[in-house]
Amino acid sequence: MHVDKLRTNIAFNGSIIDTHMHIGHWSKNGNSNNTLNFDSNTIDEFVKNPLNVQVSGAVQQDEVEKVIISNLDGLVVNGQDETTANKALLEMCNSNPKYHALAACAPSVTEGNSVYINNLIQENPDKFIGLKFHPRHFNAQADSDIYRPYMFLAERYNLPCMFHSDLQFAPDGKPVDKISSPEAIHNIARLHPDVPVIMAHMGAGDAKSHQNAIEELLKSIDNKDSKLYVDISWVDWGKDGLSSNQKPSIVKLIKELQKRNALDRILFGTDAPLGCFGETPAGGLSPRQAYEKTVGDLKTVIKENFKEQSDDLINKIFYQNAENLFFKKDWTTPVEPKIPKTPLIKIIGMVAAVLALIGLGGVVIDKISEAKDTGLNK
Image (cartoon, one colour):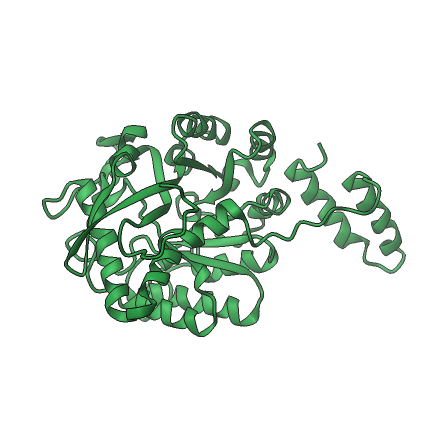
């Protein structure tokens, strides 16, 4: 099936882009003595053959046409370095046109030096479609300055950035920390308003955590201060470890986005093969069956809650939003320069000299340091 084919009835034989998958090594249930290795065979479980999905009692076949993958080995402390992890991911992605790479970034390990990622992008043009960050694993709050050089890279190469998000609350109702909080992610997104920033898992946790992420997302839209998105992996999940057939947080999210004409801000993702999708099978279902249930539950909830609007919503959430964001990049506004190509540092230096006369040179000098850190002057 051609991915750009007009689908007049999305509810049947639908197309899917899964924006959140992984390869690499993972300690099952946090037990380092039980380490799993997810490879292309694991991903193929979901993409090689059409899915059998039950939507409102009817069985249909859906196809996962594209998957967006990051390497777990580059997203954990004491894992692989950025170069090694991402080269391994690219090698695997070259084996299947459905596979697309998010570069795993570790700012706390590199102390904010994004030169390795910059080199990889330059050596492999158009191979990475975004950057991936996991503040929680590296204990580096999402709005820390060490992320800034990577965000400048994203600006230069028109790459969306995905941040793992989560927020837990203490018994007194206060956040335990803000390391991966939607607020911190919104903060970094504000500083780089031209970069699409995705809050993976929509705050993770429970309904209160999801609500917090929704509030930050809506705030960003209402204030027009950033390009903030959410993926809905692990949102409205059942206690049995499987997708719930009740999706109150997602229904609320859709309704709020409808009011703002901003339905493009929601993306389908699963985090496969973690959890019930391969790490810890649940409910007697195979990873593939758990995946099919996840797709079917969400599509059924959308159909039952949004009736005649449901086909369009399903198309946007499962396919079109990700296609526009990562592949068509319809959020970019490229403008051809009309001035001679003067090196970036030279331009900044000239501006700094002028601003120094009025006491503002220090601000620009900081930008020079950031530009050097990103390797943009190569």
